[in-house]
Length: 277
Length: 90
Image (cartoon, rainbow over all chains, first blue to last red; front, side, top):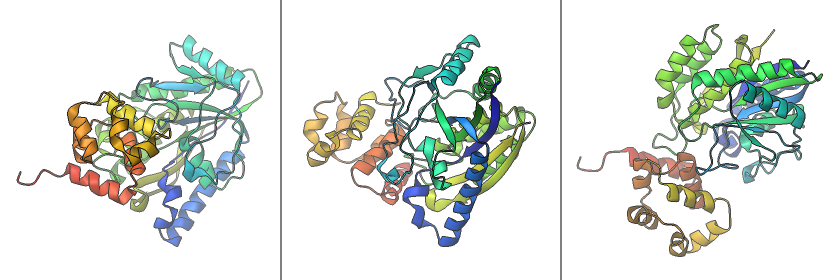
C-alpha cells in the first residue's frame, strides 16, 4: 500500500520571479526563507510521486477544449515554455503511468470523468514554488500532473474539489506499490490578472481562507469562499486547488507557514502544509 | 460573454511566429479570423478598454496580448483600470 507522504500548498505567481527585484531586500529575504522552509518540508516527505494540482495557463488547452480536470498519465511531461523560467534547474519531468492510471481508474469507478493526457507540457504552476524554494532537483522522483480548470469559468465546484482530494487519498491508499505520494496544490491566494481589477490584493479573503482552511468542518470554509472568492480576483480561483489538497489531507491539521499581501507582486502569497496522521 | 475568435487570435499570437507578423502589420493577420467588426476595430485602434470592459477576452489571454504588444504590467494595469472607470461625462 502506498503512503500519503505529505500535503502542501503554495502560491505560484510569476511576478515572484520576473518582478523579484521590485520588493526590497528585507522582503526578498523573508520570502526566500519562507519558500526555503516550505521546500525543505516537501523534500523531507521523500516522495516517489508528486501529485501536483495546478491550472493549465493555456499551455495545453484552449477554449475549444477545456477540461475541468485532466490527469497526466504519461511517461514524461514537457518542460515549462515560459521564457522567464530559463534558469529553471529541472530538465526532465518523469511521470508515473502506473499510479496515474490507477488514479484515473479509481476516479472513473467512483463516477468522476477526468480527461487524461499521455503528454502534458507543464507550466509555471507546476514548478515555480520548488524553484523559489531553491531546490536543486524536484522533490519527488516522478510527477503526476493534476490540472484543475481555474482559468476560465465555469469552474469545478468547491465540493467537487474536496471530493477529488478525497479520491486522490483513496487512490494512494489502494495502490499496492510501496510508493510515497505527496500532494502539492499550487496557486492563489488573492490576485487579479488581466481584469480591470488587476493589481488588487484582498487580504481579508486570504486571511479568511487561511483561518478556515484548518477548521474541522467544511461548511464555514466553503460558505466563506462562496461569498468572497469572486471579489478576490480571478487568480483567487486557484484556491480551489487548495481544497483538493484539503480533501486529500482528510481535513488534517493545517499549518499556515507564511502569508503576506505583496502589492509589488500583486498577490496574496501563501505557503502551507497539512499534517495527515 | 467571450468572443471565441478574439480569444483564438490571442492564443495563436502567443504560440507561434504569428506574433511577430502581427506586430509588423496587423491587418493581414486579422484577415485570417472571422472577427466581428467592432472587435476588429478595437484591435486596430488599440481600444482594449472596450475589450476588457465587455469581458470579451479571457483575462489571462488578454494579458498575454498586452505583453506581446510590449506593455509592461504597470502599463497593462493602467489600461485596465482606465477601462474600469466610467466614461467621461457620466
